[in-house]
Length: 407
Image (cartoon, rainbow, N blue to C red):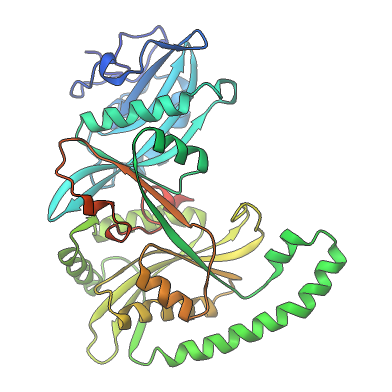
């Protein structure tokens, strides 16, 4: 079979991605190829890393979508072998109608590794919208991944994509909650008060009160950090950090490839959209490693919660705890706040699916705001999959899941 992999013969598009990956499902299996929408025949294609490497003669439009930066970054993730399908798209003649990226990962369950794909950006060309192509592409991509024994997950889904996943039978596990702490009310005032003079007058009265409250909160916070220290890591080769990750992995029944190399790679990618810092939290008396956290600072030019923008945001991008006991969780939240108070950021954001982290955030003055991160998954039928995997707290969800670290 010509593995371009549209599950058909070449459709007259000219040179396309080709390769010699293992055969995929047939057109009948996918339920996608050679079907028509509004009298048009759309072809489904799955592009592997091998295909992309041999793409010198490929269509210009596909080469632009599969940038070298994206491919080189994704190629270093766990589970990224030559046969991994990194890119899916639908075509009609010479047109790329819709496309979808996949981010490779490894899901470790009870010590056994399973191949995993996170949903990357999903796009439909405006002239082909409202024809059900996004649903069709998602369905075909999922079937193809399952055929190859690869599970699939999606985070930060839009409401439209969320409805598509529900139609396709994905398990919607729930939402990791978002918590915010503000040192300035300016973003809220700008979103809700249109008159500039009134906005300035209101800010002049309220912002000093908010800043004073933040100073008091910092004082109370520092009093809780007498038993732990927080050390900034200059790189990910820190011996204590490596030992901490091994300890965390041994205690978790489910995790996504906890290893220094993976975190380093995601850290480097995330630096393109903000200032990153990594921290190790230790017991002061014994020097024992308790947790790590990765923070990102960036200017929020895109609307948060659909209307708040124009402020400096610090996000808890990634973290892991050796234990979920109250002391360790409290230390994580406390040191996160202390780094925030030392920065010039206006807003601190923590997104977590763990109730213990929620409680620690609220105790330090953060407010629950919105749903935060959505999470959906679908796994092959032959996986031995228990109902307990549908529990939200089972999953280690952070901003470093999927391509959330590139947002």
